[in-house]
Image (cartoon, rainbow, N blue to C red; front, side, top):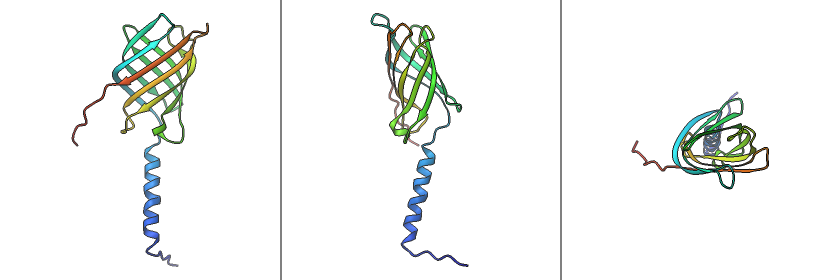
Amino acid sequence: MKIKFSNKCGPIILLILFISVAVAAQQLTSLNASAKGKGIIKVSDIDQHKINSVMIILKESGDADFTFYTDLQLSAQGSWSVGESLSQGIDLKITGGVVSGNATGTGKLFLRKDGKSIDRLTIEAKSADGGKITVDFVADQTEDKPS
């Protein structure tokens, strides 16, 4: 039995293959990235620190570890997930850490077009005593190197 395709099917098949490859490229199973940049972590109204760099580890299990390098080294833990598209950012859930280990909240991580480099990070959380914790970080821009 032969299957015959008309000339009209060729572009459609190519489009389906292209979309399949694009979707597969957007899947993220884990990430271990760090970036230098500028940001602020506010642990309370009077306690804030300038962020010089961050390190983010997103594990295959869905767990996440965050390290914020300021004049101190601060950390947080949580989980992560990707919605419909990586371009809409990675959703973060904070379940501990940031000074006393009891922060809970949400955040968003955006990667650069390569899907491996940190672009920016925002987190809003609360400590057990109700204090507001915020993180705003933007990675330094790197010069595009010719391929």
